[in-house]
Amino acid sequence: MIKYTIAIVEDEVDILDNLNSLLSHEGIYEVKAFSDPREAYESLKGNLPDVLVTDLSMPKMSGLELISSLRSYFPDLPVVILSAYVDFKHVVKALRLGATDILEKPYKEEQVLEIVAVAAELGRARKKVLELIKQTGDKQSAEILDSMKKIQELMAIRVFGDGS
Image (tube, rainbow, N blue to C red; front, side, top):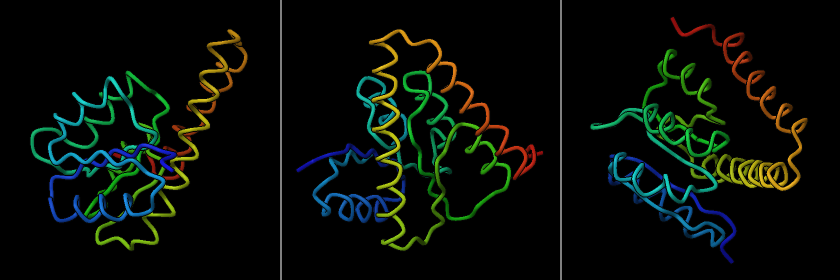
């Protein structure tokens, strides 16, 4: 039974195929795999997944650019970052854009499954809250969500500095 939609954007085909197989095998994820971030953007902007798993460093469009572009359609989209090397400035930018976790390559399959499961639950919960806010017109809940995003950004600055 498919419960969640996961989009994977990774220009290294071997890694993309491995992640696709790993997550599809679980039976609870519908996986949309993309090796081209621009193609991913065009496909996902109209039908956002529950979780975005993206590489940071890709040709044509970086993972940070992809996240930033998709944020205009779903500001609360949970994002898991993949990176062969963790660059401090990129980590800070990713956290400011709302990344929920970072996986360093090479990754452990158990770690991928755990991180994606948490992000999927978070994404589904955020979508439900946003739907309820729209249905009820509850401005106070919307303000709380906005405050939570600001706190997340401030925590990224406090923990990691400003990335300069």
